[in-house]
Structure formats: structure tokens, C-alpha cells
Length: 281
Length: 340
Image 1 (cartoon, rainbow over the protein chains, first blue to last red):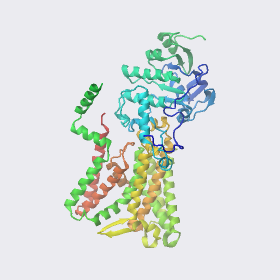
Image 2 (cartoon, helix red, strand yellow):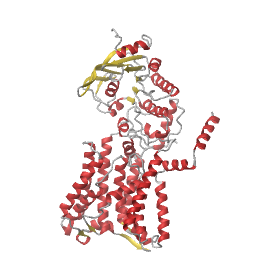
Image 3 (cartoon, one colour):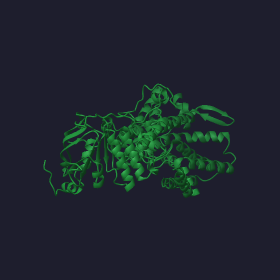
Image 4 (cartoon, rainbow over the protein chains, first blue to last red):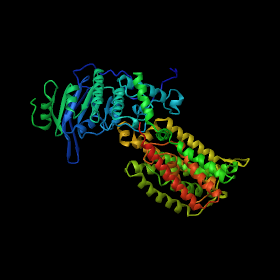
């Protein structure tokens, strides 16, 4: 099946790419992603009021907080969906300025949004490769810009299999025919396949049943064990305490503190989240 | 493992009634139902009048279909992005009147006049696209406005009078020429040009990343944006390409009608939308195939042509088209409810 055509101009493949065994720095003492003093306002509403965040490679950092605490705004600033008014974001120590989601993605940050961001009418393979389609080798690809549909389908199937997802078989199936859990699996597979350094998941288990939720947690552990930095936003405290290495607590647009599942109980976490308890540090 | 899977597969199969299977089939191949309607129409019209299925009639049918079929390509692109274009006819007329007026009685080189007309159509499409993307106005409102604007400019510029073919350079009349009649069948360059347009745009839609992005933007614009699709750029190119297609359609129209007439194709807007909708493309965007639009255009024109051959009053033809649109949209709604 390996048609040895010249592949000099494999065009749209962006950072990472399927199976580019992303090799995140094994140095776990320096954050892969860090933010300092992020501020974002919407008119007179303050979304973020000077937030700091550190994410190390090979860890799951959970972000918890009450509604309106600024979780989503924080994530959107880290993923380029929003541009912060001030503050700085560093990726592997380098200052970055994301103006759109594509910028963050090109830099190696993949996001699984709460609304999943999958296109119902397109099939699974098309969704996995959306906005980074690969073209056929040779003039068919370079001149006629023809897509390598077969190759993308095969590699998409491999990526889904790699995560141990058995509920999805046919890559040519339209996403609209999938269940909620299967759609989630598609979105996570996409992030996993292309995430070079960081994968951010926004409420990935919210709409799922118990079994499907646990499957997603298992996928998160796998991604962490590959050495990626994972940010998990969730309201589900048992899930957070189950999978997170550290927990960033967001409150009133700022960081109330960072705890670990072993240092604090779920009750403590919720108390800090709601302001009933203060962390001294 | 295998036993449970086959049992599950069997269960899934048993769940499907014949009607559900039809629903699934139509969901996978949305152009099947229009094709069926076209075949039925052909059989019925042939039974009603033996002159329908003759080579000369079919040649004429193709020529009559060409302009609407061309306009419907642009309309399909825009409807796939969940938009609508009410200014199709206006852009076509404007482009046509500018081409013809510039080149009238040797006033300007025909090729230059043609290029200016095409460029104008591209610019008109681009203007629609800019208004839709930069000002974030609904396509319905934008094109309702530009419909009036372009129509008015076309009338003002041309003085409202027609220009006959014998006052025009041969290049502008070229697409009306062709081969034959051989055995009564005549094939014009205009028909060939429209066929090529279908092939090119059909390829772009089904085989390139751009085509995929057109579907993605139409199906769920926010998800497409979050997935990294440049939604604004996709929309802008769609409206601009549509403009170019309308310009080419204007050229086809001059050849077809043997004149440039400011009040030609008054029903172009509705007919192009009708062709798209009958062809199985969803007005909500993201779903449909260009081949369906071609079949839809053929249905619209066959209906007109067949009913008039059968001596049926014009108003009944309009009525039949209306019924067909409602049936087509109902079928679309039903297909969209398909379950896994």
C-alpha cells in the first residue's frame, strides 16, 4: 500500500501530526505552559483579574471553580479563543501571543471544548483532520489540491485505536450518528493525535454516563503518561480528585490557590472554591 | 466477542423498517430522490407528448437549463454555508449589460469587455461576502439590499434597453454557437461551459480541503472556527467564486437569448434556489451535493418544458414548481431526523 510517490510537499500537516511521537521535554521541573497576571474584561465585567497558572509536563492540572469564577475565560485565553487584555503566556519558557485558536494549535496546544467543536455532517476521519487535511502526494495533491481521503481515514482509525476506544469502528460514519460518549471520544482522539505539548479539556465528562465518563478519565491518564501536560476543567469533584495531580482553584476571577488531592479533601476544595476557607501560602 | 457483535448487528438490522432503510439511503445519497423525480418526469412527459424525448427537444432542454443550472452552482455554494443569495439575477444582469454596452457596435474589444464584465461580477460577489463577513449581516438581508442596488445600476447604466446580438462582437455571442443540429440535437458551447463549471466546482467541493471547510462552516460555524477553520476566509471565497460563476452565466445568457436584455431572467433568483432545494441541498447549510443541484435544475426546466409541450397553462407550471419545492423541503426535514 506504500505507493512510493514523492512526498516532498506534504502541505497542510501542521505541528505535531498524527503519530509524530510528540516528545515533550522530560524536564518536569520547568512548566510547559505558564501564565502570569492574565487580565480579561468584558466591558465592565471582569472575567480574569490577574491570574497565574503553571502546568508541568506529564501532569494533570485540574481547574475548578464556581460558575463565573473565570474558568472558561482562563482556558479561552490559553487556547487563543480570546486575547487577554494584559499578562503573559509562556510555552516552554517562550513568550507566546495567540490571536486565534489556530495559533495555539500550531504551537502544540490542543483543546477539547465543552461544545466539542465537531461537525455533525462530516464523518469521523474528516473531523479528526478538520483544518489540517493532508493532500495526496505528487501533482494530484500539489496542483489539484486533492485530499488523501484514504490515508487520513486509515491514520484516523489508528489514532482512535491507540486510545483504546472500541466503540468507534467505522471512520466513514457521520458524527451526527454517534452517541454523546462517542462524540467525546472523537474530540479527545483529535486532541490526542495532534497535541504536541498540552491538551486542554473543558468539562469532558459533563454530558456522559458513568461508564463513558470513566473511559474519558482513562484516556486522560494515557495522555499524561505520554508526557503531555493536561489541563482538566471540571465540576465533577470525584473525577477531579481521581485523576488530577494538582488542582488550581479559581475564584472571583483570580487564583485562590493550588492544592493536591492528597493534601486537601474534596470538602476543603469546595470550601476554598466558595470562599468558606482560605489557603495560606 | 464476535457473537455479541453479530447479535448487536442483527438487532440493529431488525430495528429498521423498510421506510427507515429508505430514509438511511436518502441520508447517505441525498441526490437519489431528485434523480427519481427527474426520471418519473421524463417518463411522464414522454407519455404525454411524443415530441418530448426527441433529440431536438433534449438539445433545447439543455440550452434552456444551462443558465439556471450555472446560477444554481453559485447558489449551492452559498446555501451550503447556510446563507442564501437573492442577488444572483441582479449580478448576472449587471454583468451582462456592462459587457454588452461596452462592446456594443465595436465600442470596445469584445474580450476586454467580457473580462470587465466578469471582474465586475467577481467584485459584486466579493461585496456580498464582505458585508456578510465584516459587518456580520445575515446573507438574506445583504443580498436583498444588493439585489436592488445591482438591478438599479444595471438599468441606469444600460438605459433600460436591450442590445441585439448583431450589435455585439462574436466573442460575446460565442457560447450560443455550437455543434449540429445532428439528428435534430444541437449542443452549444454554453452547455459545454456549464458542464465544465459543474465538474470543476464539484471537484473542489468533494476533493479539496476548501470544499470540506465549506460544509463545516455551513453545518456549525462556531465548531468549525474552534477547529481551526478560517471561517471568514471560507465565506469570502464562497461569495466571490459565486460572483465569478454569475459572470460566466451572464456570458452563457447572451449566447442563449441572442441579446442582452435588462429584464431577462426575472425568475432567476427563485429558479436557482428551487433547483438547489429540489436537488437535496439543505437550506440550513452543511448538507447537499452539487450533482443534486444539476438534477434539480433539470427538473425545474423539464417541468416547464414538458408541461408547455403538453399544452398546459403557464400558471399550472408555476404551481407545479411550487408544490415540488415544498415536497423537496419536507423530504429534507424527514431525512435529517435519521437515527444511527
